[in-house]
Length: 388
Length: 99
Image (cartoon, chains in turn purple, brown):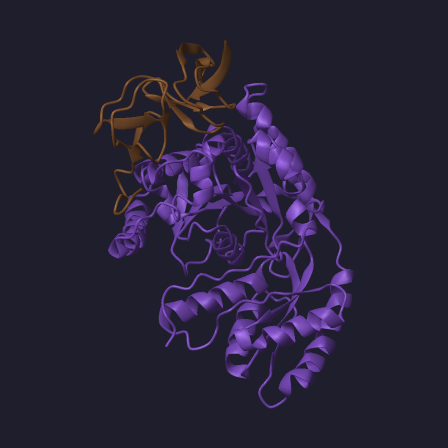
């Protein structure tokens, strides 16, 4: 087996990024305006606005800090500015980012107003951009890579072609030593036993069952008609009829490796992670999944689509793969890898998987994905329950 | 006759249209694992790309099988060659409401 190497940014804590962003992270909805103000003033700064952060409590608040802090700590970020309405929670998020050793600074709006807060934050962000512009890519091997996988607006071509091709690529990445994260807890329904059987460790398998049952119990408690939500209207248009059918198509992208870590919302990635396939408890909504996977350290996302989901992320490149020839033609600007030849048996699963890997190698080394160029920067922290 | 239907598993009673199929069209189906032609059938109605076609008669209440696994239950009798979708197939897991 050949090694896979690429040129990445080695961060202070040894983690490796494939992008070099300077970000402005608002802690709460009230701070979005100031964060966007900083990003508008300066070249090379990405603001990451979101609607949450006020009056959250307990596990839901811990998850918000985990997501905001984890996003700043992600190796694709060179340096981060955090802005909050008050300095206490802003410092909490900045402290999580500071543990990586990268430059970070927190600012509050109370006591200054937006305009002075923007000025103070922008002066620091300007220094960070110039600092980041001097960082160089260094050759590293694939054991430093953390990637994630999820499909969206799936149709039956996903289960037939694009997901098996991605599954081949996932097996290869894990052979190279990479860590691959998957989730979509509710979307395993109908195939949950197959996933559980792939977890060799009995304690982890039990943890998976607990997480799965807890998630699905919330859905069943509502007793709602799930058609249109899960499967989505797009799934149904593409020919998927039931959650079981969607799940069995979904798991085609998991490859064949054992699942050796099972992470609940707040669990960090294990430090020792050479060649791992990890389950993470997540929503099956595209932006929520990628947001949480990025917060746990994923620097590259593989996204298979049937009907044409357009999702991206502010700091993580999203590679779009489709096997639906109609989508490949009608939404061409969104598709990075077209494997529709696999649907018509013109190429094999391994050939399609190699196409994905070859494209990924380019993206690892700096090629921008369609979603990056099209400014798809969805950032959607998962909210567990109502705010106080 | 064109090859327009892919079947995941030999135990399946539905296949997937890998191209648009017209009503009345005779199509062959092929198994995904080894690309062997499994048989042929006549589409009784239009089947859009990605949608499912019944490979044999399926009785109401019988499991609809794809990937060698149940993906739900037939909500009415389905004849070989008919379109199988949310109008005649229900989830066995989540069917609290339904169309």
